Amino acid sequence: MEMISRYTSAVTDLLPPKQRDEIRAELHSLIMDMLEERTAMGEPEEQAIFRILQELGPPHAMADKYRDKPRYLIGPGLIDLYKVILRIVIIVTVIGISVAFALQFIIDFEAGPMDVAEYFASIFEGALQAFAWVTIVFAIIEFAQVNPASWHSSKKPWDPSKLPAPLHKNLLIKQSSSLIEIIMIVLVLGLFTYSIQYVGIMSKSDTEWNWNVISFLNIDYFSKYLPYIWGLALFGIVIACIKLIQRKWSYGTIALQALHAIAILVFICIAFSNDAIWNANFVEQLAQFNMIDSDPASFAKALDIWESAKSKLIPLSILITFIELAVLSYRAYRVYKYQ
Image (cartoon, rainbow, N blue to C red):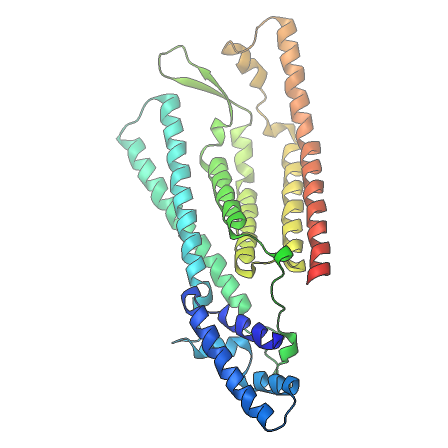
């Protein structure tokens, strides 16, 4: 009976959530009726179940029978999740851009017609890019799910014994954690893309409203790394979407998560090992805006603190990555234990 449950779950997981309960009950009833006929004729139950599932066909083929069309750019099994992710990414993108422009207005306290036009143009561009990237990610995932090797052999029939086991509670991935992960990636990407100049220390200007921002980074040099940051962000969103779809930890998702963590570490080590990425005049600007005393002793102390803080970024990143890899290793052990 467990094989029947696995089969109905594998079929309905490929269908829209609203249809799953009804189709699961209908399919289970169909299989039980066929099983009753076979066992009444003397066929062993286990053998009868195996032959019935072989006759019904692999889950993807059975799921196609419940659809109006068997193929989509983004199929019914993913479309609801796609809509949720698309809304979240677009909303977070719009919020991130709005915050960036609001921060710019607060700091400069000047906004003309061109600034307003630039804001709406950025909103449109950001929303369009969010739509394009989310659609591409889900189209790739949809394509990857077509023709699974274990179910599509032209030389031999599919094997019902290879149906995935029911999800163990210790392997489940909470949807909320993956959604939060996507939101954080989009927010960080928006920060690096639109507001990196505000990553620093704010100082009240001599004028009544304006603020000065002393950036930690060399903005021109840092901008050279933006394509790599976008690539890492896209990779992270793909992994989060895969976890949302699979809903469980597997060796594959763990390997992808580990690869992403290592890729981020490599990027940090390469980018921040070059002192040119930092604001070379950071301490001088602190003194210029009266955030530290300008006497030699205070200046030297501030410079030592700044150099020490810069030197600790890569070791701290290495430590965080090793902790993440240790957690992922433990997850791999749980997959081995409970899968």
